[in-house]
Image (tube, rainbow, N blue to C red; front, side, top):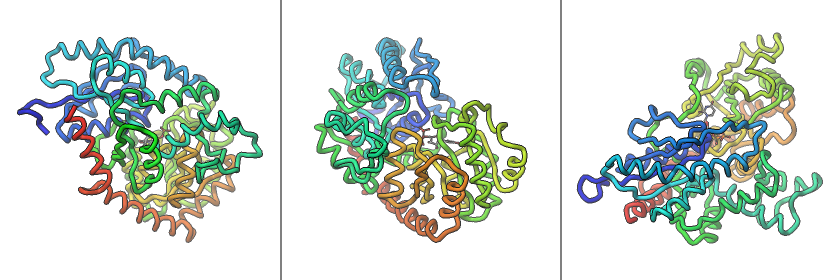
Length: 450
Ligand code: UDP
């Protein structure tokens, strides 16, 4: 796409500074870049992306936007509101200064993470079109927006006795699966929900999902909104393979995987934000070891409350782990899931991890912790039927049984078959003429028409 001779159109991307949001935004950047657009990433100083992994993009850091957000003690609602206010104050002047450097490509539009809602107002002030990127599942978006109505009708907050009841109009979700955030109180969270569900002057919404996974949720969203929605996922499969990891990946685990037999390893990771206490960590270690299966375990430093890393494991247990297990601080997850030795994924069910697992046909043991992870876990286990959910507290016996069910039992083999089938259907969606490919072409046409 070289519109009018050699001139490129520039797209400005505004990610929310968390790994699970940065990844899909930069993947979208790569996709648009390979379709001829120039990409400028405007980011906060808190948790900045690494420009060296995307040499084709320009990066603009917004001054005075650092933060000391701590996942264990900070309120996410306050963090997001303050971040929006700080970024808004700097965004406009930063774009103007960049324009003044004489870049020969005009800004076609601003694409912003739904939680960076300040961008919509700035775009409107500058007379620029804007597009929203939603990085969680479509079903999660529906469940999240339904919270407002459920609150009005007196369904939430709900007593423990109702936690297993189905939520009206949200099959297959139960009350316990609703995507509350643990980081904030309900009133604040609902305010945030109403901010993210209003598209205001934005022209379109991009979803990192796939029609064949979420057809009916996507149709409902489209019915509710006046602007086009573009489900163009899974973006990590469409984008070129550069990594946007904020932490250093330990690739030694790939060499370890090469030595394991096909479908024999359970990969364990709880993503970038979830955490556990020492008791849960030790239960997990016993459960994995007692399963007698090989495991690759990502223990992110700081993810066990009160511990630096794995030093809190009892001595005897450490030796047992060494026999069958391999622990790293951070893994090249997409490569791990694509490795044929990996037969299952014990996951917190963040949306990126869920998509990455489904796209490789790897069945899951779901251990959701908060927010959208519960919705994703329910869909994995009860809609796509490619996983099982650990429902109660982390306990060694339950973990051991779940691992054996997935890696050893017939049940796991059946899930792997269904997973393979789903993987193939997703591959068709991203090929020419497939639903994601068509949506992407429509999105590109829209951006070029601005
Ligand atoms: N990830 C990774 N290495 C790891 C663990 C996670 O690269 O050892 C990546 C993973 O591939 C995914 C992202 O971190 O793209 C986590 O996003 P997700 O939405 O699954 O969860 P979150 O961290 O946002 O809760």
